[in-house]
Image (spheres, one colour):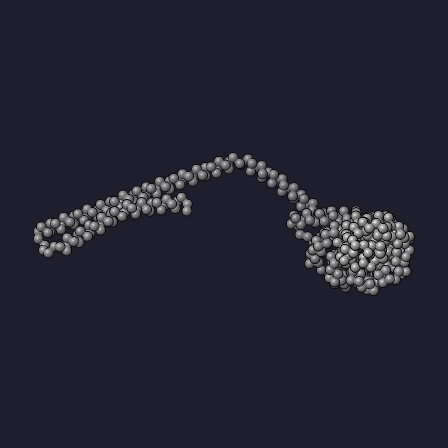
Length: 441
């Protein structure tokens, strides 16, 4: 309850206290008069005089009561005036203080206004610049619209996409409307940064604004494939092909999706279509060799990968595929040379280091094999197969301690290797060892 309400309550109580005695007096007088009237039995002259006297007394009582009420009313009004005056005084003081504070901070407010005006001018400049840049996407970026399921463009192209992406994000922050191609290029930027969910989100926005662009659907298939959503990826890439049947990159991407679905014969059909549409398509030949490798058609796979390398001698994945084919043909020395070429072109590939280690292992060059395995583990610390193969190499070196150490790590990452170890000839010398038995039981 605030102060005003309390004051009004106090005034009401005072008024009641002042009025109550008057009312009491009035009631007592009335009772006395009623008693006298009822006791009289005859109207004598004395009675008439007495009655007149009583009337005069009653009149005086009424006048006293009225005067008292008027006095109380005047007192109440005076109190109200005083209270309201007090509140008015406080309100006036309050507004004086506010005015004083306003005058005190007036200069500071002016400074803030000046800063705000400068900031607005700066934002207008940024706004216009962003608007102009949005209309000037570089030709370099436009030449790399198609996302590749395997190949990564040069650093120069990736930097260009990064610059375009930052520009688009700035325009979006400033409230500039974005077009379908803006979301498309933003998706490419996120893809090369391996932010696949954000890439997919922006491709969806691009499709909402313009659903009839084949390359957008094809790129969506690549991103979905990266996210492991292979069936959805197949639907997307088929839509791209329906829109543009002679779209070679879409056929290549379809082959990549089918490869993940282990439909290797269908992969061959898709990549052959891509090769017919786009001559000297190194990536298509490399993917064809990978499918033939899975079908154990190693000679045909070798022919396809050699064609890919002929077209693009610096194609690291093609060299890696060739190493795998040579390994399966038991050509370990040749495979190691090919792996070295792949590593030279693309050093950070744990799969190639692992396969090189396997080729060295086959040649019983265990120390070199272990060194290659370590390179693979450095790049991929949770690579269970490499820990297992490293344990095998140590076992063949009769190094029980390191063998069991690496086998334990392999089991920690993948418990199913326990069964492999029980029957693996590489651990033959440890089969009867109690520590080995305890580890694999």
